[in-house]
Image 1 (cartoon, helix red, strand yellow):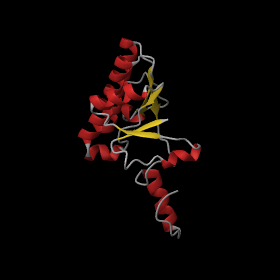
Image 2 (cartoon, one colour):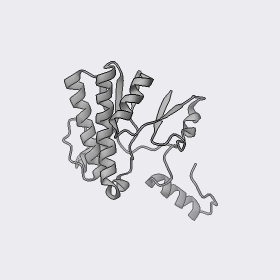
Image 3 (spheres, one colour):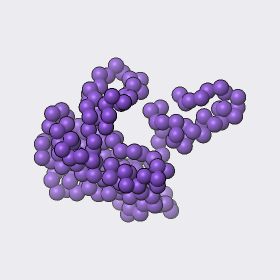
Image 4 (cartoon, one colour):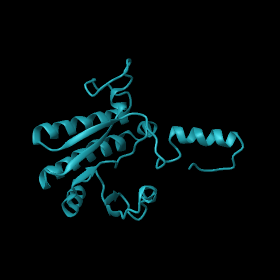
Length: 181
């Protein structure tokens, strides 16, 4: 198994070991730099690529809109372009977001709903989703977007809303913990 990090010396994939004793080879890659993406994909020759490289906080996207949009949209484009040029049999998964749809009004919603994002993160996710669709239709790649709604993971950092609130509730109830899970 391979993973990428902008700075592999600082990468922490230890949380993944909860699900097994996987050996993760970590290489340096900036998703917004096509030369690095191309180099890694051509060296590793993966069967599948799961793109979880960008920041994932709506709140942060307002403070860092440039990095949010650049990391998600250009990172997606660079990965798809490298796959198209190196090996069209590589399967690509793009994590989409319900934030692409903004406030949907009525529920349930499905992938046919028009994108109407209300924050920079949603704009970037909508753009990435459309780019995936374009590469699937135009180049015949196995490229898909999974539209993710609110979800939690023990791997999420403590600054995400749910973990932050749980920690505050525990502390208010008398817990001496300073971090989550």
